[in-house]
Each structure stands twice: as C-alpha cells, then as structure tokens.
Length: 575
Ligand code: ARG
Image (cartoon, rainbow, N blue to C red; front, side, top):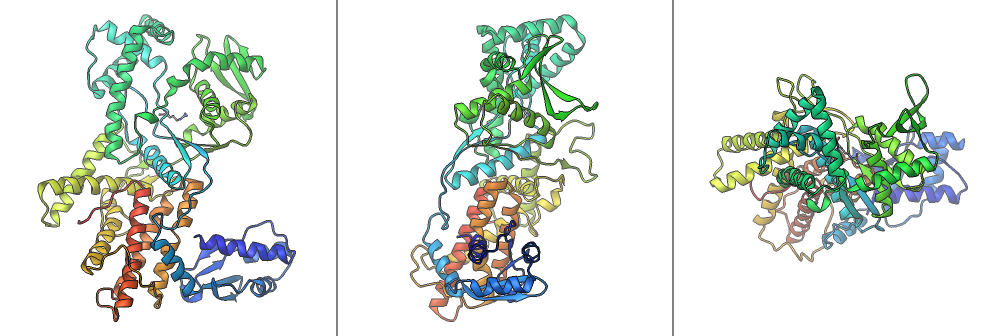
C-alpha cells in the first residue's frame, strides 16, 4: 500500500471531476511533525497559479470534494499553501494487520517486464579495484528490488573479455615461453602489464600481438584455449569477491564483449548499406549530428579501424541489438560511471537509427560519482596506484574484528570471524549505498563502522535489539490473533513508517537509488527507538496491548530485514 500514491490519485480525481486541468502532479510528502497532519501536498501554490485560483480557493475545492472515505480522519488547509491529511487510526491498523499476515509485507507483484541490468563488468586479466565497487553493489540493489517486484531481470556482467589485450598477452606468453598458465590473477595481471609496455614500444611485438588477435578471432584452437583459461582465472577470482560482497552475480550472468564478436562484421556492413556509416581514410565512421566536436561539427564514432579492428562502440551497438532481439528487453539499465555517458548514448542513438531497437525501448544510464579520500583526492594508494577491491575488503573485515573485540563481548573464535566478515563488508557497502549515487563521496572508516548514525552497524544493531525484545516476550510470533491497536503518537508514527516501505521499493525500481532505502531504514530504526522508549512492550498494561505492540515490533524487524536484504546486507542474531 502506497499512501502517497493514494492521496495523489484522490486529488487528481477531484481535479478532473471539477474540470480543473493541471499539468503538474500533486507532490505529496510525509510530514515531519505529525501534529500538523501525517501527509501534506507540497506544491499547492504552483498548481493554483497554473489554474488561476487562489491557493485557499483551490484548497477548499479539494477539501470539500474529497470523499469522506475511511482513510482520512481530517483534512485541513494551512497558510501559505499546504493541505494536511490526517489518516484514520483504524485504517492504519487495518493496513498493518494485512501486511502482518503477508509474506511479502503486503507488496504486490507488478506486471513483469524484461529488464537487463548491465553492471559490475570488470575487465579480464586484471584484478577488480575499488572503482568496480559502486557499479557492482548499486547495480545489485536494483536487481534485487526488480526481482522482488516480480520482473524478469537479466543480469548482464559485460566483462571486457575481447580485444587487442589478448593478442598482447598471448604474444607475451609465447615469447617468454610460459607454458603453464595455471597462475593467479595477480600474476596474470603482471604479465599483462609487461605485455602492454612492450606493445607500446616494440613494433614487431605489436605486429605479433595483432596477428594473435586475428588468429583468436578466426577461432584458432590454441589461442582460443589460452583465452578461455585467462577468462576463467579472472572470473573465478571475481566470483569469490562477489560472494564475499553478497552480490548475486554468478557465472550464468557473464555476458562479456566476446559474446557479440561474431555480430560485428555484419553490423558494420549493415550500417554502411543503410548509409548510416561511411568509410573515411580507411576507417568506418558514423557521424552523429546529436554530438558536436570542438569545431562544432558532427562527431564521428569510429566503428571499424583502418586495421579492420572493431571498437568498444561497435560491441555496444551489437549488444543492444542482441538484448532487444534475443533477450526481448523492455528496459536496459547501465551502471557505469559518468565518463561513459557519451559512449553509451552514441551506441543507443546508432542502434535506434539502424532500427535494431525501437524508439520506446527504455534505455537508462544510472551514473555514479567517485569514491574519494579524506583530502578529496581520488581513492588511490600513496604511489598513485589503484587499490584492489580484495585489499579493501580484507581491511574492512580486520577493522570490524578489532572493533568487536574492543567491545569485550564473548564470542567464540568462529563467531568472531563470521561477525567480522558480515559487519566489515556491510559497513563498506552501506556507506556507499547510503550516498546519493550521483555525487562523489569521502570514504571514512570511522564513520562507516560507527554504531551511531546512518550506518550498517546501527541498523544491524537495531535489528538485533528488536528481535531480542520479541524473544524475551516468549509469545509465539506467527499467529497473534489480537488486533493491532494504535493509541499513542509513537505507535502511529512507527506504523506510517512501516507502511512507507512499498513506496521506497517502487521508487528504487524506477530510479535505482539505494540511498533512499538506507535513509528509510535509518528513520524506521529511529522511529522504533522512540516507540520502544515510550511504549512499554514487555510490561504493557494489558496483554492485548502487549500483543499489539509485539506485532508492530515484529513488523518493524521484518521490514528492517527485508530492506537490508534488498541492499544485499545480512542481519545477525547477536552483536
Ligand atoms: N568493462 C567496462 C569498464 O570496465 C564497463 C562495461 C559497461 N557496459 C557496457 N555495456 N559498455 O569500463
């Protein structure tokens, strides 16, 4: 149930019924001070200006026309331009009752769409570094939320597993006579760096590398075997990281660049036939008037180089065609940082021009900012190197271990390891997810591991407190038949917060913004604290009130757990 949506629709209906046509949707907000009403319209002034009415006139019309149904207890106008909605306690308790007995917290499945989520997408023969964290964990939240709503989600890990780098690597392995390539990923990366250096300065080595690329492309058995091995070493390391991060990606989701390589010659030919691409100085280029170069001319997107090689863009054009034709995508969402915006837009425009995808295919680039050090510089080691994701994870786990130990709790060795893993990793994830993805953020160990504020440990701890209260009551939690009774302001506040969950889920499904879930969970946990301080549960006056409060607590715990689950964050029993 989405109360904001209900109120919004009610108002829209009234405006239509009394023949007022407004182009802007009423914006409904949850009120911070509930003595002024639980919800309010925030843009009444704007709507009244558009309709040429005074704000109070419009407010009166809305208030007098709203059906006196069982939702609203009272609706008031307050100056300069607010309409306040007070919701009936009875309605709130009925709604809470419904979701208490629902396994999905009352959230209905939607009409399913085929949605491709392109995320993580590291490059082969290199270890993942901190730069891959955001795409991987933010993308995974969107996947979890869309899945929960019942969509058919196709996770696409568009790994960089094709191109000249493999020619270089194979040439290098040959030259150094390295036969055993059963090596670690870091060794492989070391070979790759050496190969790249050589490629840049040594003409004949570069020539050899190109030969190997072309052999690989033509399906040469030997080169293919080496390539397969390199991909497999890389991905098995990456899957270990995904598992540690509690990210849902697995080997079925790998759809790297190589998947589209067979399509590329035909795409280039077809774009030429359709006069979308032209040949210029030996390269094949698409000129797009939608993008201008420094001289104000249409920008050229090269899709085949002079040496016949294809490019990152060519692959993404083919990939769009594939996702539409083969995967029947209705919506495609990309999680890469803002620097790839132009690249993705160009691929999208070209694919539309060539009619590989229809105009109405939803194409969304969900960008994100960077992780920064305290001095606001990019997140790198002192000597300017990128930090490996595995190093960051290990450090987080170690820091969490020290923190837990310092609290002098009595955990067994095994419990301590398990708990440090969960808390350490949740902390980095939550710190990232709780920031608006569009902005850069400063990475701060102390803040993220703190038990206060909008952090993973705070929410996880809140969860353990609630579950321990529930346990202490020794009342079986499944089938409490007594109805929920809402009396105090704290109970009502908490109820409204619990009921807001659906709106949060819907909004993340649209915008891919996990930070609103974090903010929500923080507010929910805070509301619970107020409720807990003011409304005794274990020593409630009557058993009826006790059971009612217990039900509200159970729902809070379930919502916290589900919310954390949508973020890919685990809960613990004790911490
Ligand atoms: N592998 C790329 C990189 O590391 C990201 C791929 C994003 N997805 C895509 N379809 N281009 O930058």
